Each structure stands twice: as structure tokens, then as C-alpha cells.
Length: 417
Image (cartoon, rainbow, N blue to C red; front, side, top):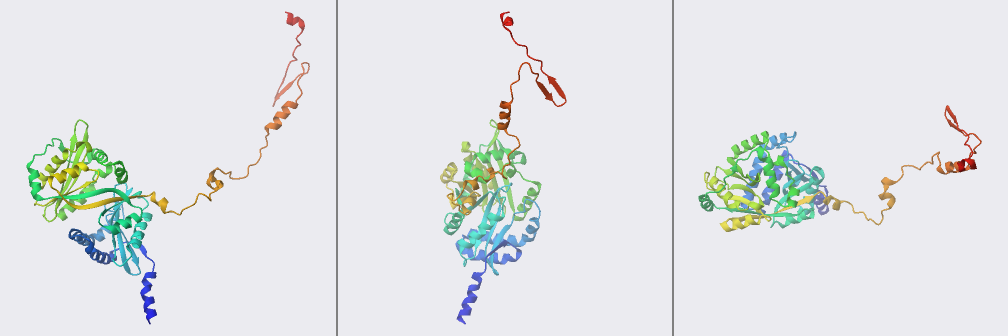
């Protein structure tokens, strides 16, 4: 009896793990995994996870319908689950990072507490690498204190790209910054006609390696009609408002600064701002923050959150000087498709023959000697008797026959003349 119970308990472990797209019946299991991971999350992250699950249950049918044909929301919920038997082991959610879909982002990886995270997590990641063939680069962001997640991503070929620091400015500090009048004479609203200027500013504000991984173009800074309607509906539902603008340099005819702020009209969550400043115009940080502080004053008093990277030393120095608080420190990691060469089967170069390497240069069949030989022609030419002066020489050319006149002999008399 004990042996039978032992065999029954080992049966689920012997079943293979199946990776498949997420379905509506998996939402209960995903919610249970989310609740089990609350111990490792901050209260803010836990509340965000609960809101995402509620939003997903409400809009799952609509998102599934949109995934059937091309549209900006086709990959709004692209997820895969790991299933063993009837139990859900984990879930991974991915999305395109740019319009060309050459770079994809891993939004989150959730695993059940009882599973081996390195094994199941690796299977989920490898399934995405193999099924999404258009992705040349993968990108993710992880907290620097999450050791398990860092070990999982490094095991699967992800490497450090940049470090991000998230700051928050208190409402009292925002009120002080709003008292200063910003010196921004060429502050303009953003439209699709400015996509080329914003693209040039984006490429100039980041290192070459980060620019190569992000792989953005002018289309990433344009808003389609469907996207504008979707953003309007989203802002109406969530009670938010988005304000954006850029600073234009008339002499160089280039954009040197850009900001976008998402404002919460209900006053429940902090406002979120995005800043992009040209490296040669770092004096814009105080001016742009004063402009953001003035915009925020018209809404409920909440803090302002913004991010800085390790290659933006001037921004971090200014935020520390004005008294902004650090909230989170994360690491951006990337994985190129060139890692697939390392994952392939190793082949030793010692056993490779030149006939196998130069297969394309080998003859397709055995060469057949031709009917012409240059040696025979030269021998025939040398064996022909030399023509004499008294004998006529006949040249035949098919139907045409020509006879050469005899060459007269040169006598001594003609030589004397």
C-alpha cells in the first residue's frame, strides 16, 4: 500500500511540461500564482498585480479578438503558460518593444512557489525564443535585489545593458520648483510631423549599444488614428491625462528636449513623467522640471515619478541636489540572437575534412575530356610541308577557292638595282 501511494505521488513529476498559449481557463491559475508571489512584492507592486488581473478578466475576450488580425493592440496580451498534467506551473508575458518588432520585451515571468524555478523558467524563456522568430533581440527589466530572477536570466543568455533608478519628487518640492519661471521660449506641442526630430533626439541621447538594442525608427514616434482613439478611451476609463511637448533649437533645427507626463485626475497614484534631453543641453533639466511642476499644480497634489539611467550622470546629480528620493533600482538586460550559436551543438574543428568544408567547390560530376586537343593541332601544323615557290597553294573556304600566284625569284640583278 505504501509503495502504491509513493508511485501515485511521483506520477505528476513524471509527466512532461507542456508550453502553450494562455487561455481564459488559465486566469484562475495565473491569479493564484500572483497571490502566492505577494510575499516577494512591495505593496505597490502587489496592488498593481491585482489591478492587472482585474483588467485582464474584464477585457480578455476583446483582446483575444484583436489578436486575430493586424492592429496596434494585437500583442497587448501575448502570454504562454507551463502546464504539467492539470496543474499550472508558471506564466510568461511578452510584447514587442518597437514598431518593427525586431526587439521584444519580457514583461513578467511568474512561477509557482513549489516548482523548480530555474528549470520551468528556462523552458518558458526558450519557448519564446524559438516561437517568435522575428525577434532579433530580447529585453527585460529586473530589480537588482531579485537574485533568483537575475540567476534565471543570466543562465539564459541575458547580459547587463544599463542600470535604471526611479525617483519620486514630493508635492512640497514640486510646489517650490513651480515658483521658478522656466526659460523655454521654443516649447512646442508634439505631433506626427515632429517624429523625425524626436527620433534624432532619441538616438543622440543614448549610447550606441543601447540604441542598437532598442532599434527604434521614426514610426515609433508617430501615433496612428487607431492608437489615438485607443489612448483617448484609456484616458477616459482610467481618469488620466497625458501632456507632452518638446524644445526646438532654431539654429540647428533640431529638438533638444522632450517631456511627457501622465497625470492622475483622481489623485490616487503619483504622476509619471518621461524626460529626454540632448547630452549637449543638460542645462534644460531645471527648466523642464519647472515646467512639469507648473503642469502638475493644476491637478490633485501627488508626487511626480521619473527615471534616470547610469549613462545620464547629469540628471542623477540634479535630482540628488534638489532632494528627490530614490524609490527603486533596476537592471535592464538584453539577449541577442547570436547566443543561439552558443546554444547549438558543439562541433570540434579537428574532425572537419577540407572536402566537407569546400563542398561547394567540388565538381558535380566526373569531368569528360573534350574532342579538341591543342597538342594535336600544334603537331599537325609542324608536320605540314613548307610550300615551294613554284607550286601553287590552294586556300579553301567552303565554296570559295583561291589560288596563290607563284612568288618570283629574286635575282642578283634586282638586288643590284
